Length: 55
Image 1 (cartoon, helix red, strand yellow):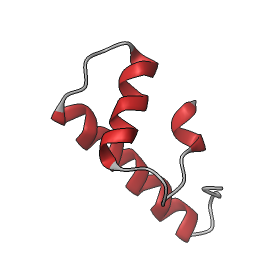
Image 2 (spheres, rainbow, N blue to C red):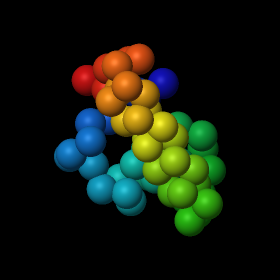
Image 3 (cartoon, rainbow, N blue to C red):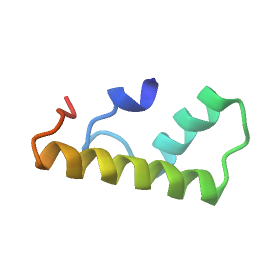
């Protein structure tokens, strides 16, 4: 899953959406951007709780 490879810094919201769009073969929408950011925020929260590592 390519989204597991992204780092907190180094990607803009649009770049994350581009990756997501390419991965899923769909045009990029604001909804896709929002969904990607929500996923990312969950991953960051989990990492801060020590459940997983973002790196």
